[in-house]
Structure formats: structure tokens, C-alpha cells
Length: 277
Image (tube, rainbow, N blue to C red):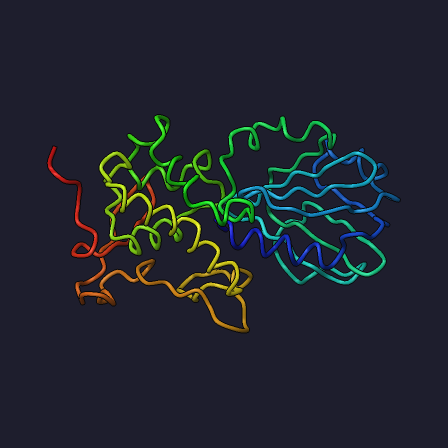
């Protein structure tokens, strides 16, 4: 599943193509949404913004399109009237005079009144967005959140995937954050001292932002091409999908474990387990 940096880059790309423009054609694959095909024609696309791993496309006629890529969804940009050569199922198409934005394979798609969108169940359950510029300079707020009653007893391996803690975190980000801070996923925030908590809070902001601002992530086997950038510095994996390769700090082979039914990669020497109680 794409994580916060990939979703935010997708939002940037889509907004650059169509934001501020008038919808000339709208198409929805699902019958319950097809009544909006006429409703959206003639409206102007105000914005396309990420909320965790969801995107909100706001129109000036009072409607907002909610989409979540889930595991297989992908947005593409094309010329008006054109469709990429793909075996994927087209679920949403919005066309303006200069571009078409196309959502393939996703199934979590809804239209909400813009003044009610914040009541969407997914949005209601989100914590602060890890890439929200307002949060970026506030590591103290993240540290306080880590040590709050709601989260301080949770194992870090689970907590860092919980969108109710920080929206936009995901599997590769949690692996890199935990390695950067030298923390084992079985540790809980209440096991950490003040210095460890502060370091983790800073990493939770810095590493997703580094992935986003460096315009891509390092290719690995099976990585989808649309997650990658082809120019500039890339975010580099130090443990994610590097099982058996030497740790760049100590040379110990990177280990793969299971955490929350998902693979998690760590250095067993640099990230020691939970202290005895």
C-alpha cells in the first residue's frame, strides 16, 4: 500500500494537472456514483489534498470526492480523451480541457457534501497527518502523543501502523523510523526515557518528510514504478527489504520478522528487544 509520501506526491501531480480547471466530463464505474457524472460537469476543481492515505478532491459546487487507493489503486494523468494501455479497471475519470485524471483498481470511492466530509468515518479516525506542515516543526506534540494514555502502552510495531496515532505512516516508514532510533518494535512508549521519546518524535516527522521531499524511494524488487521518481536524490532504505544484508552501522545481518501480520526489517544488534520488567 502506498504510504503518506507517495499519496502526497500523487496529490501534487493531480493538482498540477487539473486544479482550478472546469470538469468537462466525469465518469464513475460504480452505479451508485453515476448520478454524479452530470452533477460534476461544469464544476471547478478547487483542490486535491491528501488526508493520511486518502485523497479529497473538492469541487466548487459543494461536493468532495473521497478516494482511498487501498492496496491496488493508482491514479494516472493523461491527455483529455486518452486512456493508458493497462489491464486495470478504470473506476474514476475526471476530464478538463487540458488533462484527465484517472483512478484505477480502487474500490473505496465516495462523494460527500463538502461541508460534511469531516464526518467521514475514515477521516474521523485519523490522527495528525505526519506530513502536515503544521505538525512538521512540533516534535514536542508528537512526543506528548507518544506518552499519552491512549498510546503509551502500545508496542511500537503496532502503534506506528495505526492511522489513529499518526496518519500516513506505513510499513517501510515504521521500519526506517525504528532503525534510525535504535528501537525494537516490541518496545512501548512507556519503556522509553525522555531522550528516546524525543528522538523517536523527531524521526517520525523527519523520515516521512525526507521520503516526500527527495521525490522518491529506492527501488526494490516488486516496487511499483509509479511509487518512484527518476530525478534527484532518493530516499534510501537502510533496513526495509534488506534481509540478510549487513547493517550499515554494525555489519550484523538485517533480520525480517512478522509484526501486525506484515514483514518488518530490523538490525538485531542496533535494535535490542524489550528490557526486562
